[in-house]
Image (cartoon, rainbow, N blue to C red):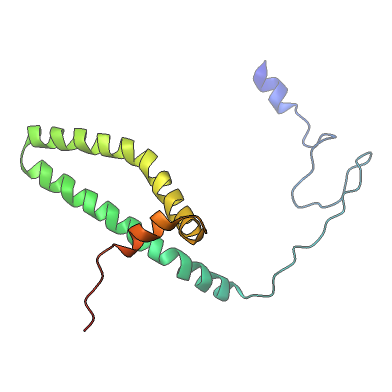
Amino acid sequence: LAQASLLNFPSRTINSRPFSSPQSLPGEPQISRRPIHSTGASSDAIIFQLAQYALPLFVILLTRVAGFLAMSATASSFGTVPLAAHQIAMSVFFFFAYFGEPVAQAAQALLPTILDAAGAPPARAAGDSTPKRPKE
């Protein structure tokens, strides 16, 4: 019964429209279509700007993954029990990293504002007490 209804299904209904046809069906409201406007920049320039921003982040993430992979490979070379201990340690680390990373990013974003605030002499004193490189 279901196959018979699918075979008799009309190829075009009131609410359907083929993708290649921009015209409205009878009784359908006319939709105004605007062309997509370009910003004027070529796609190569946009890709270059994106690469300048994304490449350092990609390298950092790739380095982290390579480090985790090297640790896992090393732990697996020691046997089953060390590998299980490594897996537990990494699971605990990734659980807490989920909460720690946003806090660290928020701290990095808010710290300059806190240090520039007029009422923050203790923060300035802590920043001034950090070890400095010897001048050569």
